Length: 110
Image 1 (cartoon, rainbow, N blue to C red):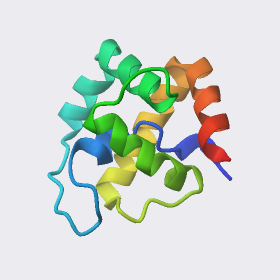
Image 2: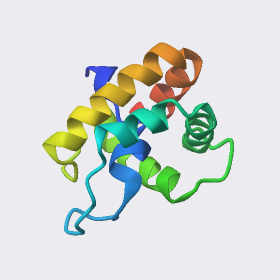
Image 3: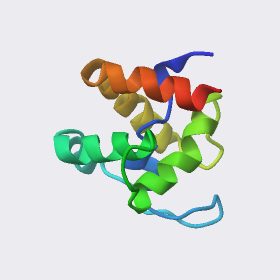
Image 4: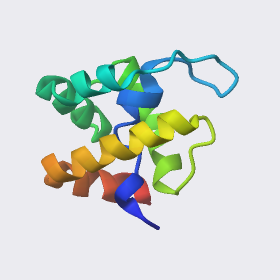
């Protein structure tokens, strides 16, 4: 399994809207994604939620739903654009939050 493309931060991309594959979700622009990645407080809040260290907002809840799927290499609810954005986001988390990344992989890869 290749962890480079884990969806720990699906919260930023997929979690911005609906809970099922049949629910139309608004597209997240690359600009919005950049803004989210540059907001350290937002990222920290989502990471703490994912690790069970803090309460989750709706984005964090969606993250917890999708993370196990993406860790297993599949996100059937995600569009090609979302998948690309997830890959970019996960690379960012791996580079900038390596300790949290390791914990998340352990927690969700199971």
